[in-house]
Image (cartoon, rainbow, N blue to C red; front, top):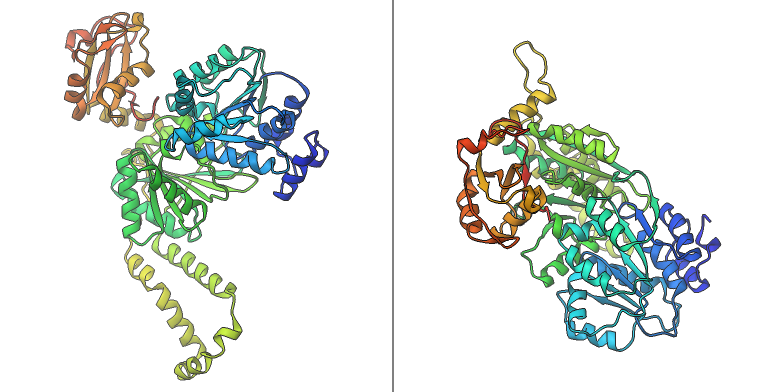
Length: 571
């Protein structure tokens, strides 16, 4: 089966997908569609974003649907409103020739009364975000008794966003004999636990390697000085005049600042982050999808579920705190057989993380030379000339004005006209980059002249990093079920600040030592002291020297073996 025409899906669906331009079946579709159609097995499918997963589960599900039964037969859960709406639209497009097909999207940020009304009118497929679906279930406005299939799309994203409890609650409300189809880009421990608890002898399908990066993406990095980060970003954007991309930032504040800077500097950019209203997010997304917006500056949370084709570049303004998130970021480009580029701006002390990500995704990174002024001017000039060469001339409209133009320019020869035309459009680049410095940096060298080893540089970086942390002692430990992830979640929840950086945690049975950046020490102490964890009152204080020297398999020193577990985006 290498074409949809040869597949076993309904003829109405074949007609619709051919009209949509689908011809060759993509690898994930080739493997998933027959299993859904020919068996009742659960499925765990690992595949990158943009590999055709929606059609892989959507087409066979639509083929098996009872169109005479107006009761929910299929429940599809996705992490974000945007992805929920996109899946709904895709299913409606595939099923445009299926008489009586009803697909309803249930998501936050829209009228729940209207959504409940649509459910009451009868529906075969529900596409929902976990939080809003739980609201509808709690109000007892939907029955899932006839659900035959549950699809968990972008399962790792849903768990990263903290929907674990919602997923558990929803799945418990569905029949035990239902079929579960789980689609994920990465196979984290949490995803594996969902599969273990709610799936029966699932068929495992992996497209490429587990947790691997997209095959059509070129991975590059620039070594930068921290003070030059924004200047390097501008040079990359200028070097790719036709860029249509996403710039990922760590925080909402940084996202807003970078987007504002770009707009002030004349770039066609906008921001997408959690502080925006739903209408503002929708407006930014609509402009980006329509390509009236060239650059979207986004946080990882805001961009989850973003489904846009033909993105040329992903730029990591900072590397994500969690290496697995890099897979999701880079997977936004190089989709549907297209090629793409993922560029990361990193300080020299972060270079060790490039090796970690290379190992995880199974692809090598290439160090990118930061473009100089002359390089950028050349690329911009050629792009401008290409546009001029390919512009469509409306002879009928322009002929009336040409005699006056010819007369005005009669004293200039061809070379002069070209020079003046180029200068008119090009002077701002020439002026800006005329004395632009070289922003490329070299790895420092030892006195012997040899380059610092990666291990040596990493050691120096971790020591410098640790000096900015305060060691705290909390009266909860491994005997209470505490682990690093729960500790980070506790700090996030009680401080309401996910930007607090948390250092290495030394878990003992009855207490834990962990580092917090010095600027946030008082906030963490005040926010956690006296709160409850597992029905125990939290007591947290700055660790005494004797605590740090207590016998342990791992001696805890603030200036040794320090690893940064930033609390950001960890839940």
